Length: 407
Image 1 (cartoon, helix red, strand yellow):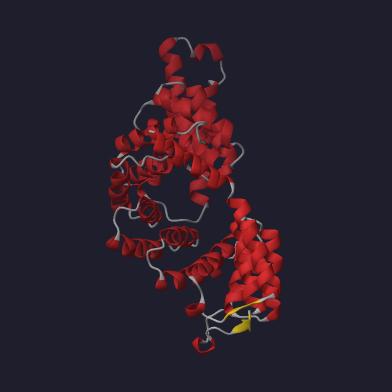
Image 2 (image 1 turned 30 degrees about the vertical axis):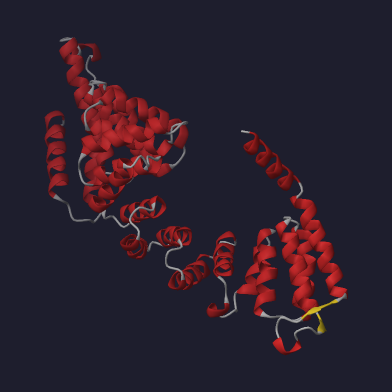
């Protein structure tokens, strides 16, 4: 016990004096710049005193400053060394210091034209990530491929490269690169995630599901994995599994994410979980308004949920809102008309004298149904597009209803 205590005290003392020791090292190097040392380059001069090269001293001084995280002073030494002789070494030393100081533009200018064979692994990484910070994705891809050709097991670079390829709609290429790595190392979670995401974005949904399931099996549970799993199952038509994973993703994320909310709401409606679906869709509406594309979907699925729960007035109003975001849709005016018809039948079932309340006038739900059916027919026949079987059936239904009420 006494020995362990003394050892700990010595360790603490050493750590506390590290800065002092490095400072002494700097002083010693500065003194050596003015003195002479035994040459290590020419054995024939052994025992003789020769001048130490100023550039070597400046680099050593810069290195010592970097050990102290003093990039300001190190920059001055490296710059002097670079000015004296612009070798590949001095360029990479100066570039490293600039990279640590987040001066990515100057870092790139120093490293970009150095032959690959003359660059260190660190220098290649600094060039690669500098392009990333500068949002120069094309050069990032080029430098990344060069780096991986020499150092194929650099997982961090590979993952970043694959992400950029996916952003450039080249997910298939990202899949190829990630799979090559996995043939050598199938346990790296970073690359396994990268491969799963690339497969998903390349619309290879079944392999993506298998890859995400492997991640979940080892406890690597993330929002993205759960959400992508849910969406992959949705694209494959498996609504129940889609619901299960989107629900887990929604519960995993705090605060809830709008994209997951409206997707989960849509799946609930398709599974006839109408009240639950409306809850998610309302929450998504607050977060996503006024995104036209998404709001159209939200109101469309809200209307379907209302229609499924026989709340026809709300269904009609929701489809009217959906039309505000997409006036070209044929389904919206047709569905509004169908909601009006269902509302009329519902009111008549509640009150047999419903028609008499309107006197000689046509009941309002009927009149509105006629108006929207006529609008639907006008849009369906005037768009110049070939009519599919579903639309043809909708046209027939609209004609039948109009014939019932108009002479």
